[in-house]
Image 1 (cartoon, rainbow, N blue to C red):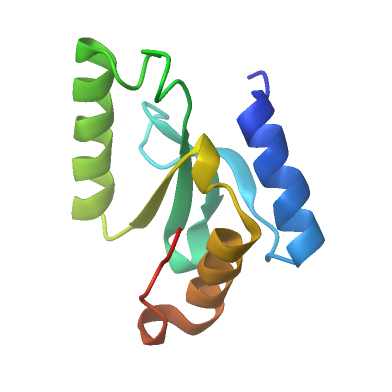
Image 2: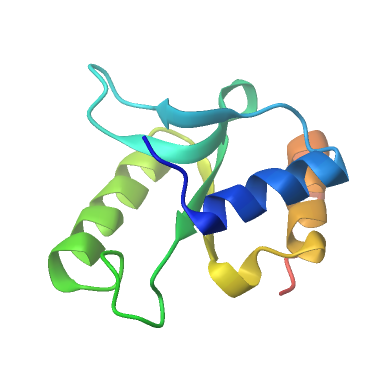
Length: 113
């Protein structure tokens, strides 16, 4: 699995801000049908990077969008909290809030971008 520039940005910022260690390309379904970009399986929190939001990338075209909706629904049914981030949403503020959520859970539910 190759790393996109947005994923690289997320990794660098997550490390700089001290987010807890995460798993990349985490397969949340058996036998590995779907994966998420970044996951904290112990607390069922994950991050999906949505590239191509302004350039009609795979996540914003018909079949890709439908596939992502199905993945989000399956994650929700399995009890995961999912943060979907477009490129401009990968900021220190957003990642600090995700970090707080991982560490504090439902006590911290206000994201701002």
